[in-house]
Amino acid sequence: MATYVLIHGSWHDGSAWQPVMTRLEKLGHTAHAPTLAGHGADVDKSVNHNDCVQSVVDFIVDQDLTEVVLVGHSFGGSIIARVAEEIPDRLRRLVFWNAFVPEPGKSLIDQIPPHYKEMFHALAAESDGDARTIMLPFPLWRDVFIQDATLEEAQAAYEQLSPEPFQPFVDTLDLQRFYELTIPKSFLNCTEDTALPPGEWGWHPRMSSRLGLHRLIQMPGSHEAIFTDPETLADNIVLAGRD
Image (cartoon, rainbow, N blue to C red):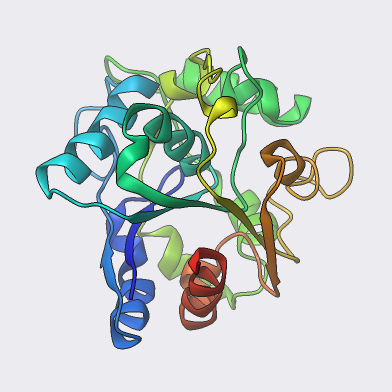
């Protein structure tokens, strides 16, 4: 049986993983889903990418977890890559679920299409408070991120989201150490995920190919299978994370 640490994506917090955790635990595994620094409702959003990474490193070390299968969704892919640089000896495998695998020396915002980049900069400039944040507009969420849900399901899921700190999107990530690691890696691809437009900007094979030797697991579903099909997602995380 495996120990999974599940890292959420942008606008989410760790609670989004609960149905997936329930399924993993039913299968006999241990699962944890920490919330990244600066994420969730009513918290200080003045964080950078390193703060998010450190919150996961601290969680794993404080819990004294070893042989961890570390799973990152979307933005969480950039987090697990950096965590792997800091505590590689505690990790058994990395699983990128429709996740960013950033190129060395670039930021996350360098990895997205120009129209998204323009929109995110505009949303950040309009945000209130001391820290710049962005909130995903519901029409975009509905049609691109969770298109396999009913309107009611999409609205209920959207209510669980919160504004995303913008600074982690624009921080430059070195990642030279990550690309030298020999930790086994997997890429889990939901085949109907259009959060990044299919083709030139798509998740697979654009992001997955950067992992070098890796295990590819594919399943039907949108970017938000965490809400629309958590049990199948959990089963495929097990396939992606097994020895």
